[in-house]
Length: 271
Image 1: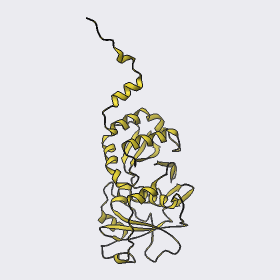
Image 2: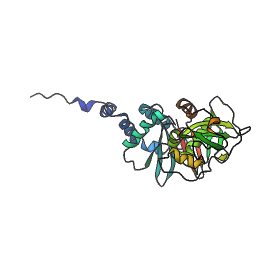
Image 3: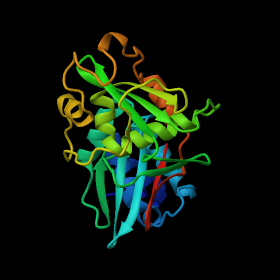
């Protein structure tokens, strides 16, 4: 009997790999790629290494809004944060990637940017902001809490640098999930000439639930007692501006290499 030649062994390795991934969901493809580049990813120091660009491309194959954050190396492990970049349409993609993450010896996988109230400084495009000098005014916005954020030296820039930094500081203080699901309008204003009210430093709150933050908790944290009582102004005079996905995405775009400053460590974000 004449046997057919075994041509499979002659196929290039790249084609064999491609065929093994064919039919898998995008999450599985992503984690296979991540594991294959584990060492290079773990070695990232600045966020501008070529592997970071490749990582962004792989995340965008899952969802075009996905971005990431690397934590500092701590006891041989490193945090890898999966972020929707504040775009709620991408939240299911973050959750799906988090659920399908394999066990990784050197990585801790975190869905959504978590609250880090002890990390108060951020540097974006040459601008450095400190949550201790950025202040907020909270007021009811329907069933949410609206925030007017006062930024020292605020001015309009083509890349919306001040907006990027302010949103990232909010993510750091409250966590990405809370900012998008429990906060209503977000309005960025200059510190000079701001309206009267009970302004407080952005880092003035002290404790956070681990993952689920409700609107009522946020209202208590920021001092908004009910929908009819506000800090210095009534709901009727509250700004009607609400942070939209488009505005949020614009403010959070182009942030590769953003540094979040913490004594003895460095958090690196990319979009």
